[in-house]
Length: 278
Image (cartoon, rainbow, N blue to C red; front, side, top):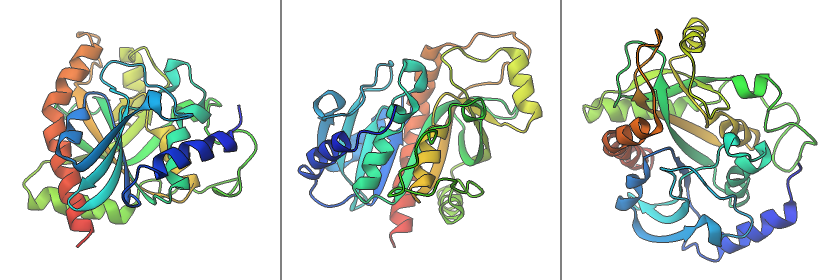
């Protein structure tokens, strides 16, 4: 499936007509992290179902609304909920919102997710700064850039050596330190889902250097970097590593952890934006 440029323009026009000013940041909220939007000032809320061409979120914990407003006096566009490959969408549809952000002129992306711990030292409720990722979806052929390259967005073979912006990582480390917030760091692996990982799969992921695993983020980051966006990634650790198969992982557990994680990630994002704009 190729990107429908006419549809993309209709989506962009709809959002542009509702913007007070061009957003400086695009923010994607993962499972159970929607409470972060409550602190947004001067906001307007637009359901995904109302936006022409926008794919619809179908998973519990993903409200499915676009929030336009301000954090720390800075204009933002927030996706309260995201679209996943396992919902039956193509990679082009999963990453469609990133293309919209790029057409809107947004150059900074803050992307969050709920992730399962692979690193045995990580605990539910921890926040992990994503320093790199492993694209296990794309390595098997599901790369979101497959097909004809759209030159107006980026090159045929985009570099991924710095998928996550080093200056943004430096800033958020300082923010965490200044505000006495613990910030883990590690490598995120993107799997297709929707089944959770077996103990053997988790042990394999640990062996190849993975610290946290989830079912999103990586396709969006690839498309963001293709369009030369600066990316900051944060994983909320929702459940502990189950390397021996002695516990059960559920989506309800993930959503429950989100209630603990939301205030932490919200504070990090707010302080980051304030710090980065000084």
